[in-house]
Amino acid sequence: MTSPTIVRCPQCKTPVRWGPDSPYRPFCSERCKLIDLGQWADEQYRVPATPDLPFDDHPD
Image (cartoon, rainbow, N blue to C red):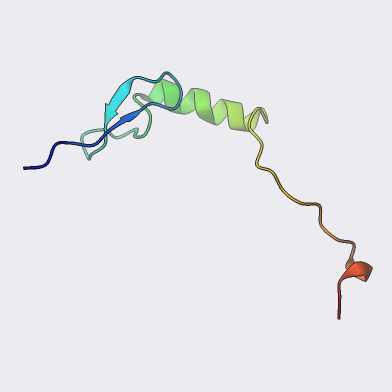
């Protein structure tokens, strides 16, 4: 039998068992999940992107 996969909650770093018995995975709780969601909503996290080219600058 294999041992369960354990990950750390991205919010509070608590060890979390990765499986169907952990409904909020990778978070340890609904609280940590909602804190993370709020940080995304407040734009505290950002995904890097390149600026779009103006329509006239696109090659034909």
